[in-house]
Length: 438
Image 1 (cartoon, one colour):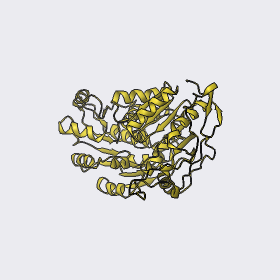
Image 2 (cartoon, rainbow, N blue to C red):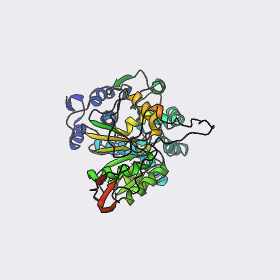
Image 3 (cartoon, helix red, strand yellow):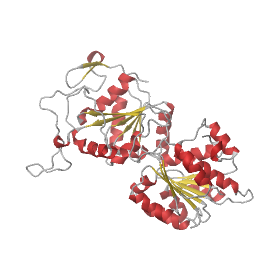
Image 4 (cartoon, rainbow, N blue to C red):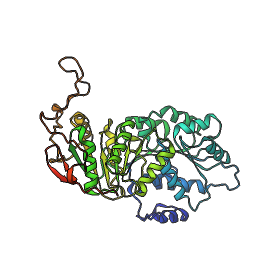
């Protein structure tokens, strides 16, 4: 099937061709005709499936069909809600690219950006707003924007929005938009909470699902390294340096952990940037741009980056910490292996995280292969050997014991700092460290 067969107008076909796309993805094949018809759609689609174009292209076609060039100022006719600033930036860029040959105006409304500039642009009028809920509500409350003329409402990454506590904001926005509208809900997973939201938001929707729920891309190679927590940083430095990896996205659990690992990797000679919620929007944009352009090789990120990052041919993802929510594992490693490209996802798992690994594998309904020889003292990832979180010991105190074998040697130096360029691991093995400072 071609994009022509989907019924898209010439201007959109030209814009799609400019992006280098020739064949629509499965979600695009199923969703675009339905949205052009004006149907409400509940779509379950994993990241990297082309879902942004699947709602953007038909949305643009519907708006331009009834566009009034005499309308001044322009009224907001379509609203795309997303959970994070990074995803908003990506969706905004896509809408701009696909509307290249159309007389439509698009505005981004996100936190971290200048309120004054956004207010000025909103008062000038626009056809489409791409927004995060919190900042949009701020503008609504200050009467900078009117949502009473919305014709199409899109909720992208709806499951993530629920996880982040945006439900009250979404409900408020729904009350401000006309009841007679087209509504589209896209979600990587479709649990009962999403179906409940869909029943409130959508009118007689058609449900579309193109990827098996809780599935990872087939072209992503997944591996688990069982390793003591204290050796994780060293192993990452070794993997990046010895394999000369040019681009690796590393996920950590906390903002403090991201800053700490960034500093440590820089000390190891690896050009690194951090991305998390405490960074200013300018700093976040700079870090992402440096990573995309190759100015830094490693990007250390919290789960704020697990969705919405669109990086062409990202080859490697590393879970420095396993995510607290099993579903986030899928979203994290979904940053690689996109659009048919191959990728690798490596999880560094210490015994204390064995329970989280069990939950992830239970969700996936399969076993993730283990690396037998990690170069370090073997650790057990069996649940029976892993200390349960906050489990009381015999003396009533919380048990955070490590399962490292007594007498195991410690790796004293980070990767690449051994004598003679040799990396000595915890078993006394020497490894040549070929890490370059690319």
